[in-house]
Length: 145
Image (cartoon, rainbow, N blue to C red):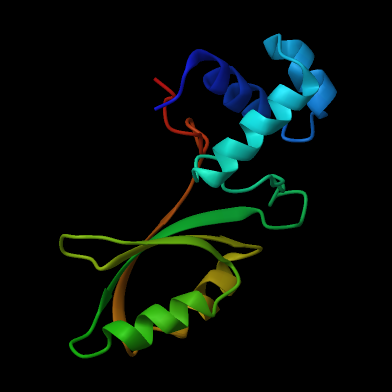
């Protein structure tokens, strides 16, 4: 899977995706060209998929986060899936096994806005909503070992 140098590259990039190749090379003890080539290979292998930013929903005015379990009514699965995809406040959604078909995470500014969003699918699915009080474990990368 990953050798020690690749693991150190991935850890450094996970801490700061904007680190320069020169700084990254110094941190892991390789030349800049070797480091650049290793990063390129990690991208080609699909281990590194993107270099991105982490926005603060709260700073953007989204003070509430909710987890919504969604169970489409019979024959409405694809319709509900498209409705979920079309709601920009849904920041991620998993299609799951079990009683529910989808588990969605969304950000809203008010409870009223949450109600409006849920109303968009109310006639096509049953929902169960939990407002997030805190997030003791933030989204993180899988272990590298």
